[in-house]
Image (cartoon, rainbow, N blue to C red):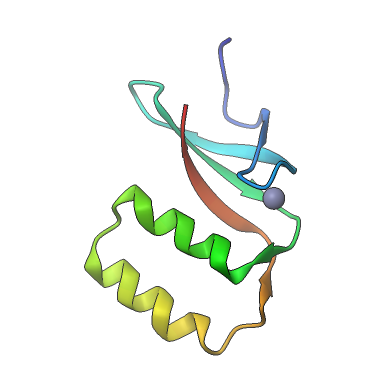
Length: 78
Ligand SMILES: [Zn+2]
């Protein structure tokens, strides 16, 4: 199945999300989901290896945020 930017793709929670970016080797896609997500789902994106700075940034901002977040972007291995 060939994917394109702008196509629909399921986010990790199973909602319908949109593809924003596809890696050159077609193994990773970034999708944005307009549904609400639990904050713990935010942590899932840390596993994609954005580095320690990104991790610390998430910790700092997540404390001020609501439990749910909308329009989150996920990196998904396909
Ligand atoms: Zn979702």
